[in-house]
Amino acid sequence: MKRIAVLTSGGDAPGMNAAIRAVVRTGLAAGLEVYGVRNGYAGLINGEMERMTARDVGGIIQQAGTMLRSARSREFREEEGRRKAIRKLAERGIDGLVVIGGNGTQTGNYELSKMGFPVVGVASTIDNDLYGTDMSIGVDTALNTVLEAIDRIKATASSHTRAFLVEVMGRDSGYLALTAGITGGAEAVIIPEVEVDPDSVARELLDAYARGKSHAILVVAEGAKLNAASLVKYFQENHAKIGFELRVTVLGHVQRGGTPTAFDRMLGTRLGAAAVDALLAGEHGVLVGWVNNRPQLTPLSEVAGRTRRADPQLYELARVLAR
Ligand code: F6P
Image (cartoon, rainbow, N blue to C red; front, top):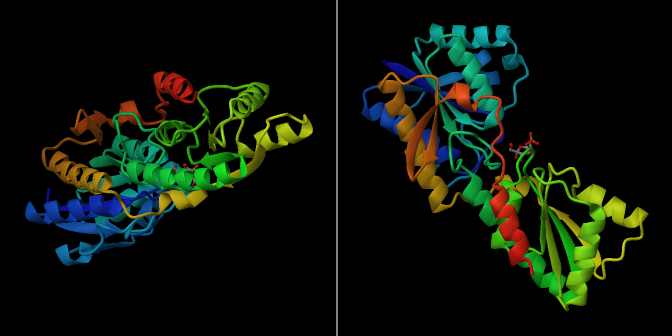
């Protein structure tokens, strides 16, 4: 292997830059030429790639986002799009590709590997819903961003005896909501993995009010059937008695920015370096994830198209702790 390329795809995540930096610098240290592909798979199809030097990745480890930029590409989902991508890689003589991203990205990566191109994936998504890793790049920073918001909301909520629905990201997984709920001391957590009855949520709120709580925080995952908007609608239409005055805060893309934590910088660095090692060792068609405190390779065939669910035991713990 002489020449490799790296790209980021799907939702950006804090720590992606640390991973890009590690791929570039460990690649160069191993005597490889390293190319950076702009704009994810869409850029790959268009041949948007440039050779990178160690200086090109200077001063980025502390920055959120991705210096290579990202995109969600429809064309890459079609075989013809992927063929174009492989042609562009061949034109540049690239013989290995590192793909940094989450679920959709690694499913696309698996398709590329099935077409015979040597690829390695790096686990990165704030949703933490990828198989083959305990933690993905960006989760820790996003969680800390959510926590800071919850701490602030609690102060104002307590001053007014209010309940807040705090909606956090997580399209298919409640990991972020659940861990934020536990570590932020929330009164309730609503996640896609567990169906809840809106009347029982109202009863819990009223009960918390009657017990003399000065506030109630409900952390709701955006992907839950009962998300913040539908819960508010239900309460209004059914004149639900909850005791507290109700307010809603949707954190949205704020969660994707934020200075990467030390954990995410280290995780990005370790996974990026391990991805280059894997390519050099001839380990292709794998995801580099973080398992038992070290990088671990899992075949993309076991990762693609699957969603790792939040731990049901943690859900029970969140309920117990909310008393
Ligand atoms: O997958 C990461 C994520 O942030 C999800 O939590 C969220 O549902 C989605 O991306 C938002 O996507 P976009 O940035 O394209 O709006």
